[in-house]
Amino acid sequence: MLCRDHGRFIFITLTLLIFHCYKGLALEAA
Image 1 (cartoon, helix red, strand yellow):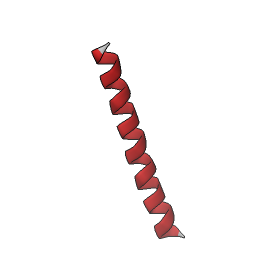
Image 2: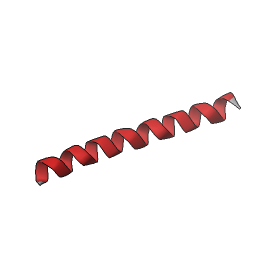
Image 3: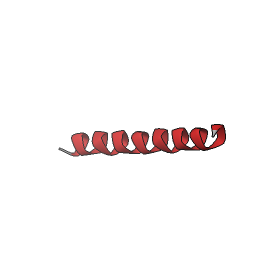
């Protein structure tokens, strides 16, 4: 259970980081 929750936390963190970087690039390109 701990391992699964930890994996989900990492997945959410990576998703947020990628989204943040993508949004930043989109704003620069606009």
